[in-house]
Image 1 (tube, rainbow, N blue to C red):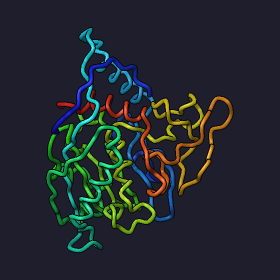
Image 2 (cartoon, one colour; image 1 turned 45 degrees about the vertical axis):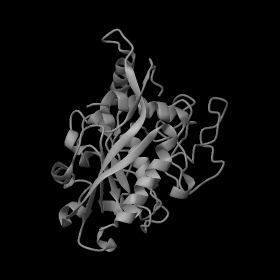
Image 3 (cartoon, rainbow, N blue to C red; image 1 turned 135 degrees about the vertical axis):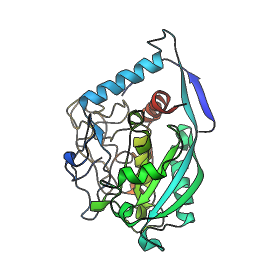
Length: 304
């Protein structure tokens, strides 16, 4: 971690999915939400926290930022430079084997900087390593995840590890949440389908915003459709300025509005990076998401 912007404040917190069964990955307090994407791809397989885990996270964030234990207001980060360790896991030489080019990696970092820059966060590529391992390459989601990450992971809680490989089942990517770091630090990071990077062939998910979406999870954000229409006007993503959304949006369905009535003002946030729309449709995080990323980073990553 390099420079971190500090702002002192007390904050009351405001507040991926796949077709794989939750029993395939055992992580207490977390669950998979089955949602199918295009025939060939599954947008996100990040394991979402269940209701009790969410409640614990919100309590910890509020306690940390408000200084409940110490009785004083604590400092909170409001942006900074995040060091990135990039791990290219391939099945041999050439793009068809996942051996992505340095240019694709640099373009991915540029996409991240463009997406998160308005929130005060930038990403600095520290190193790139390349590993030829057929088992890791094909099983980086599931049986080989732990061995791959235990061997390659670098840095601490406020450093980002990105792994590219060929996850099974057409999965585009998945990530760990900040709250998971303390219990499983070596598993922390983001895993991406190699062809989802800029210049890849995972159309329409090849402009690099699978990376943006998964790093959003790594920074503590939920999907915009979390909780559907069953809760408050802003849904269940713990962010007050993203309108509730009944289900994930695909393509770029302008004026989609799945939570209707006076209780649910606003159209679905289809251009938000935490929805499931095409890369070309996504272009923003909300101010509330910015605040939540700062709060999560402060609580679980800063200086850890």
